[in-house]
Length: 79
Image (cartoon, rainbow, N blue to C red; front, side, top):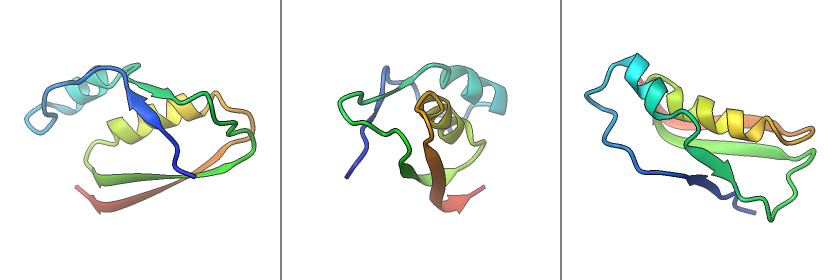
């Protein structure tokens, strides 16, 4: 099953922004597809590269509202 986490609005590229601005931009940008019951499921969150962790953290904030969900994170690179 593929989980759909939607970005609620597009933002400019994060590459030239400070850590603080990245965190600020990512605030409340993600929403989980509520048509799938994720209660007590194990989710694997995949991100191509983790820089400040802002995107992954905001996705986790969206997922923490689900009862009993556990999350693992996979990334190709970390900088």
